[in-house]
Length: 350
Ligand code: NAD
Image (cartoon, rainbow, N blue to C red; front, side):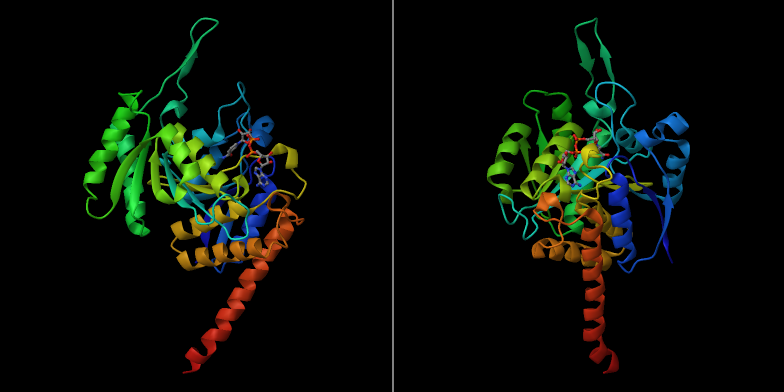
């Protein structure tokens, strides 16, 4: 039976990446019915909002969505659609794996980190105001409920995926109450996993330095919203940049899969941007939908195309366009199916 999935192409390079990703996912062996709905800067004039009600209704109904990046105006204009979506749908966990890809120039060869970022509160709660003309305040919200929930998500992820350690990242030496509560919540949850998953904590500035120098010391990281946003881009930089960094926003009622990068407006419509991050976000979606084998096939095909280095986009040193990159991945998927059929024949007749 086909999965009905909401597809939001997004702004800037989003539509090209969404089309490439849709074609790859359709070639993965899993059947999809795509419900395509638009959100972002492009629909402001038509609906008077960047996030029309029918978009939220589509995701709520289908429980799974994949989206391209959406532009957020800086300093003024509409509120981030991404932040609104995460809060409206209770997508409390932002999962961002950062894994080295062979053939991709980067400082290290064997980085394998998983970032679990709290997605609903902290400074991103959007509670801020001006204090007179020359000052402004943003309020940092940390609750025990949200902190324990993301910590449990990180530990459960570690157990389910055979990982060894969870590191909580904070600044509790300075923000003793807010980050102190986050750390205390992580420690409470860690006690339930004692003997199964190792636990430690790091102060966020020290963590950044250590990730740059010794990323192999770390495994699964759990962070409040702001540090999670920053550290996940750092982790993406360790494995080849934003063009290859996938992400997932997961809640109890819905999940939205999206690349870590933004809408890169200067490359919009040029068939130039790298579709890897959105395609790998699609692989995370395949796992979420219960198709780990198809996810593995897509990830392997992406890795092969990058390792060959022929049909890659400009940011990976190649000269191919977005759609040619996707074609090469689809060719690998088809060749993989043919290999599987050939090797399966003797067993089938035995
Ligand atoms: P960006 O990620 O869009 O682009 C930064 C640079 O990274 C680009 O100029 C380009 O050189 C490179 N890049 C990014 N994605 C790439 C890809 N797929 N292939 C090749 N190169 C790529 O970041 P920005 O310029 O800071 O943000 C642009 C807009 O995107 C802003 O409005 C921002 O708010 C928004 N944004 C949206 C999301 C989201 O929708 N989840 C995330 C981040 C930023």
